[in-house]
Image (tube, rainbow, N blue to C red; front, side, top):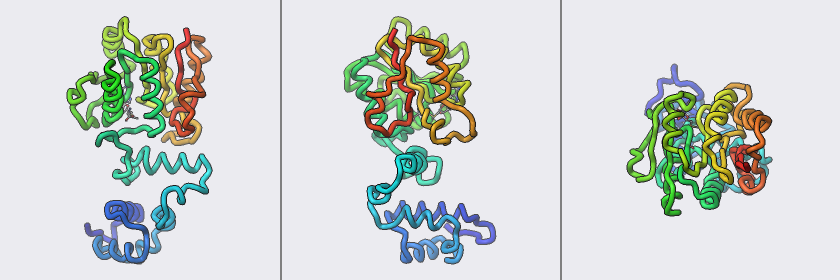
Length: 286
Ligand SMILES: C[S@@+](CC[C@H](N)C(=O)[O-])C[C@H]1O[C@@H](n2cnc3c(N)ncnc32)[C@H](O)[C@@H]1O
């Protein structure tokens, strides 16, 4: 890699340096900086005076992760997790992205464990996943169902362009391409879910109006005792959302004013504290 120093931005250099540290499993120190500047042909002053370098130094100091996060507040930790693990594929250190058997998955490990517990407890015939992206979560869910010996994943996404695997590999996944809000997709889901026990995970567009539209359309498929999970309600609490407006949490709360068939399960699914969907695990009670 060689930078044209007249064009390279501070951000591009910082990002390249972070990738260099991650790929080589290095801490940030003078030796690492010198080696990076030599191999990437970056003038040292561009790295040492880089506005991002102090942050990089604190993250890549020779400390364990526990030492690094031990003095953080929970809020700071959540932010750290969001940018460096949960959304690592997007914010520049893809090697940090959480994976399930090699598949990129955009959930927290704690939420995955909760899904394993809830699926085992509710034993659905179909897990309806709205929003697939890379498809790693579908593989995870399908694998858990296969271990249980029952159930399949029905996944919907408006585009398959980010999918990284063939659903046939898992054996118990079916994907439908289209807008979750369209009549065509809804009719197809209704046909496939008729008479079935259904567990819904809504993780598509996180704008409040879309989340609300989906929950009004798809909550009817959930059987009593099962769940409709409004994912990423933490966006609203943390301000992660790319635009500063309401998202999944606001939609879940609005929906709960319209029905008494669902209650937010605030204890069991949130028992590991670190959930991306606080107030989002809605249990059907009638
Ligand atoms: C957050 S990602 C899904 C992540 C995945 N469930 C996981 O946990 O790894 C959101 C996905 O929703 C899809 N999406 C956005 N709007 C949609 C819509 N109206 N209908 C269906 N899918 C949509 C996007 O294409 C994207 O792939």
